[in-house]
Amino acid sequence: MGRMTDRIDEATEAWIQRQHVFFVATAPSRGGSVNVSPKGLDTFRILGPNEVAYLDLTGSGAETIAHTRDDGRITFMFCAFDGPARIVRLFGTGTPQMPGSPRFEELRPVFPKRRGVRAIITAEIDRVQDSCGYSVPKMDFVEDRSRLDRWVDDRTDEDLHAYWREKNATSIDGLPAIDVDGDP
Image (cartoon, rainbow, N blue to C red; front, side, top):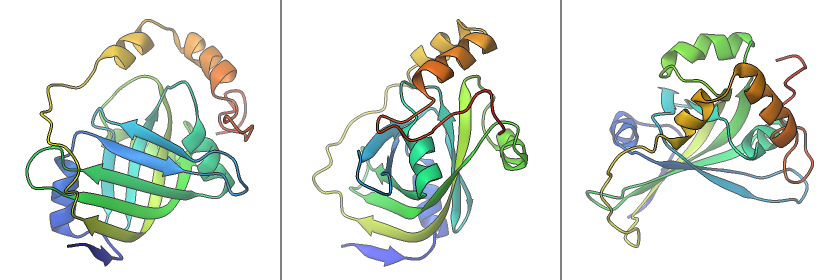
């Protein structure tokens, strides 16, 4: 039924690459709010058997950036919404790679070109859990939503930076997240 390994094998990698949505969970080191965020839009990449990355796009909060800066704990979850039932969780330590940093610039070409990228979150994976997912409903994928891209395209870079300053400077628990005016 379920299994645990210390790396992403080729079959699991191929399955993950077919999923249209994934979830990211993080939490601050001392109390505070656990955060779970749904992600999509072809923003996830497997860089090796123990390393993954995803594009952190503009949003109303910046919990993942703040939490990974605080203590790094991160979990990714993928669910099969079509085909055989399956859930895969990747456990590891995440690091936000901010625009302008060498690692961000190295990884940026691995993803589709898009505006509004606040960071690339990388994660060293130390545990992969595969479980049944028998209670996850079957659903058909219709299409990716385009609203975020349209919202970003309607704004200048200065508008985006102002939004990040206002909405993404700290987490909901007051942890530092994005410093638009600071060092990467």
